Every structure is written in C-alpha cells, then in structure tokens.
View 1: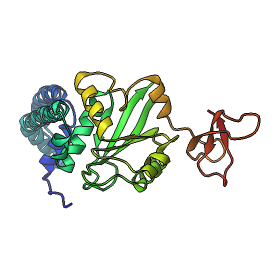
View 2: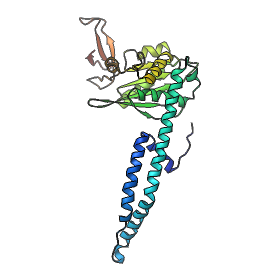
View 3: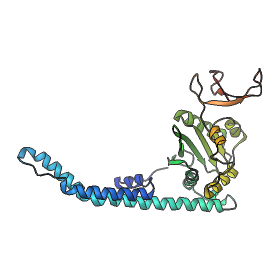
Length: 286
C-alpha cells in the first residue's frame, strides 16, 4: 500500500507523538526555557575580519534560537495533542470492541484499526508497543513488544491477521517463527479475528508461539479493558512467561522445541530438542 509523503515537520511531530502527551508538554517547557535563555547569548561580538566566519555562525545560531524558542515548543505541543488524540482513539476502539457481544465490531474494522486495537490491548497488559505498520493486511511483522525483565528487556513479535472468512494457515505461523529466530525474540503471537487451521495449531504446539483466535481475542480485549489477566489469552503469570521464553540450542544456537521422550529411561518426560533435528541433536532439560 502506498504511503503518504510527509514533510519534515510532520515527521518530527509524528516521532514525538509516540511519547506520552505529558512528556511532550514537559519537553516543550524545557525547550522554551533553554532556547529563550540562549537566544541573547548565541552571537558574541568578534573583532577583526578574520573572525567573520565566527560572526556568521553566531548570527545563524542566534537566529535559530530566536525562532526555535517558539517553533520547537510549538511542534512539541502539537505532538502532545496528536499523542493525546491517538490515545483517546485507541482507548475508544478497545472499549467498543470489548463491550460488543459478538465479533461484529472487530470484523467491521480496517486492517490498520485491527492492528491499533491489538497494540492497545498489549500496551494495557504492560508491554511497550512499537507499531511497525507491516505494509498492509498481510505484510511483515505488525507489532514489536518489549517487556522489562530483571536483566533487560524481552522482545516479542506480533502478526495480526484480520481475516473474516478464511482460517489462518501454518505458513503464517512458520513465517513468524522464522522472524523470531532471526531477531532473537523471546516469543511471538499470531492474532486473528477468525480461526487457525489444525496444521497451524500443531506447528505452534510446544513452540514459543501463541495463537490468539477469535474466542481468545475476546478474552484478551476484556482483560485489557478491565485490567484482568485475560486467562486464555496472553496473561502475565509466571507459567505463561515461561512458555513464551525462547530456548536456544547449546550446540548450534537454533530455537528449541519442547518434546516428550518416547523411549529409554526418561520415557514420558518433557525435554527441549533442537528444531534442526536430525542435523543437530542438542537437548536441554524441559
């Protein structure tokens, strides 16, 4: 899908609008105070023609400070307004979808509104959400989630499939799993308003991919709206976090898959086996 070209000022405003509105207001106040104090000092008097370059530089800096003391805070305040408007729209989108008794409200959304809805649900679950805009209803990773942990941040990737009539197939799940491995993500989500094929569910079984279909999506939205755990959706409990954590092969560093031993002294016990088996036979305790 072709994207509208934006001016430099519009791009700056959109960039700062990713921040909370109150942060933009605070930055606007700091920018005004700093530039207003700097404006009279930006051009120091110089002596001699050999210092004309310094004079011109000082004049340029002073002109920037004189204009910037109003322009920079003005753009930041516009970014604050955009941020507040977007936050309101996201919240309203989530409220309307969560209150609906069926999936009609979700099915009637555009693919972009659906991505915004899912992003807001994860945001209220405590994730930092980056909307990548995958390029259309079927293109690329739509959301990147970051969750603070004791030793840094864990990254998760999300693919949104706003498909009303068709089931999401195994190819979509495979693609997401490959992106997870390439990015070193701790886990991933495929979210749809419809359903998944049996092959897709079988592939996700035992892997750090969580499939959220229409029924679980409703629980996710309800939980995000009320602040509850969302039970079968994503949850924030320790068991869910453990299931979504990437396990890496100690031999080749490839993602590992949880399996059950079928024979030998450990028959019936769970373990992690390398996803490239039989090329690599690395294992970890499960």
